Image (cartoon, rainbow, N blue to C red; front, side, top):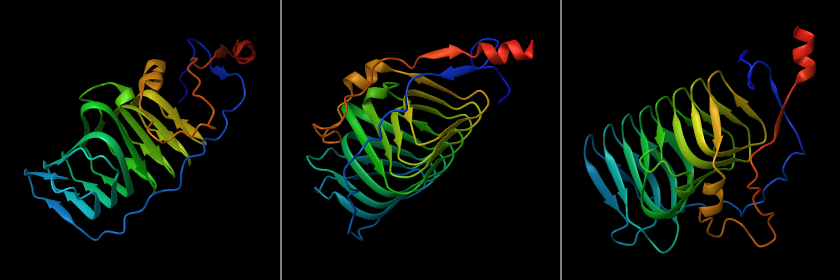
Length: 232
């Protein structure tokens, strides 16, 4: 974007890069159990205590309701088609491959924090909503072991961490946090830091005792006065 990020000039970030977060090894699914939600239908999983799955597909305008379990869910591939909805209670979800179509929705149900771990690169397509139903970023942790791209016009309410690179396309907004190896912000995209969400989110076993505590101080920015002087 050619638009100035701090009033009439560009912002410059201060301080040192944050230390790399070291999480636990990814937990794979060894199941071949498949679930398909038909067009405009609603299906519930977890009623029989099943937590390990192969491929789960939610077809157009379908809804998948996940029941709360005391242990984590493990899924090889989860696909949400156009306008499909996934309803998640608090807990851990280990998904090797997450495929999302435009206008799909991931909602948080009930109290607590959803912790979603994805092994492969994720592209969040146009008009996708993540936790838009609660708009409380402390209820959703999105952890990518690879790259993550949020395409045009998405509204995301989450604490987002990518071990790879991150990109926000045109007019996409993250309310919470966004941390990645490298970040690209396209025109009119924005990240609104929510320190209260970081403080209140339940990270489960994500953080070991030797991990650095999260920095709740908003990022410090300063005007690039040299650039402004050169332009004038």
